[in-house]
Image (cartoon, rainbow, N blue to C red):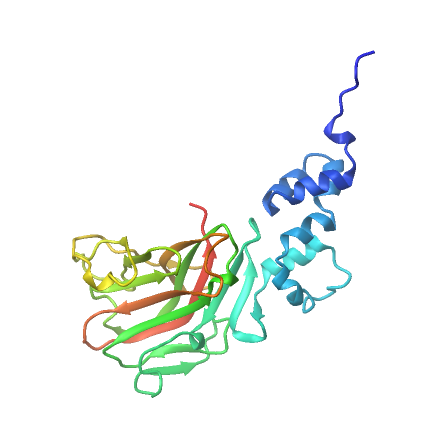
Length: 285
């Protein structure tokens, strides 16, 4: 008698659920449309529990119906809203729906800004489009630089990230379209990533070439013509500028910080930049 072949549908549901839990949220959703048997396994709490980072378990308790919701619903809740990190409303976290990777937003209050101790440089004000209580509006300043820091351990391992400056411009802004604008993303386990950018429209001007250089050698770059990186308009009304990319590995320095900085070079008058904050989000290309 010929041996009977075992089909996937013959497997115990728990076995299939375990296999699906080793994939990704997007793969689990694809499995759910294969058949009712696959759907039962793919939608199970065992699968979606594995997609929820352990350090966000406490955040789940703030969700409505947290104790009665399916883990899949809890996961979607972590994707569709932003949550304070360790009770600090100046730093928010959420999950990217397709991958389950953690995303972070640092408010302007969490950034280091030059001359932020007086009303003649920065004005702190509420903004109707912001998820934070206040944004920083540049009043008048000649030296413009800002940077934000995030502990490397907060990022999802084995994931490529980009840092984004989230900003707007006030009416009458000045000094934001000059050639020498740059961003740098530094992290302890690899070379720093530097880019030439243009926050506001300006005539075409030769700019420094985007490159990757070792941290500490940024001041020694050569100046070569290159078209700067341009901002993208977001659906929430803000502009965002990609500042640079990094990849979090499993062996990255957990106690070190990732630092994303933005600078407009030159001692001329600048005004009208409205900073909401800096975001760290996964990238897939």
